[in-house]
Length: 126
Image (cartoon, helix red, strand yellow):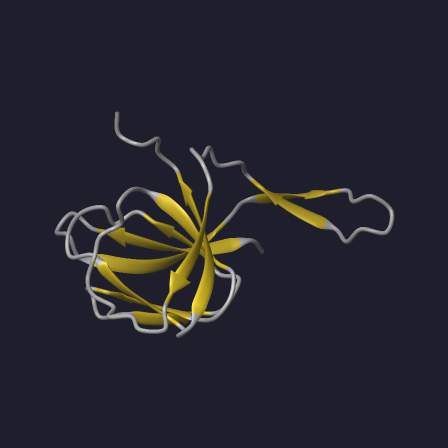
C-alpha cells in the first residue's frame, strides 16, 4: 500500500511522526508493465533536486520552512521529533513535513553526499 511518514506539530508545538496510508486505485498496466497502484493526486508548487553535504553535519532542531514532501533517494535519514520519537528512514522513503511551528525536529543523514527531492505544497511567499 502506498504510504509516507508525516512530521507534524500539535497545538502545543510538540512535533510527532505518524504513518499515512494513501488511498489508491489499481490502474491497468500496459502489457509487460507491473500493476500500478495510483494514489490520489496532491497539488504541488515545484520540485527541487538537492544534494545534502552530510559528511560533516551538525543536526539541530528546526521547523519546516514550508509544508513539503521530502523524498530521500539514497542513504538513511534519522528523524527525531520533540515528543522523543526517533525513526530511521531507509533510502526511497517519503516524508510530508508540516511542522512549520513549535519545537521542530532533527534530521540526520547518512554521512556523504545525499540526493534528496523537495516538493513544496505551497507557493513561495509574495
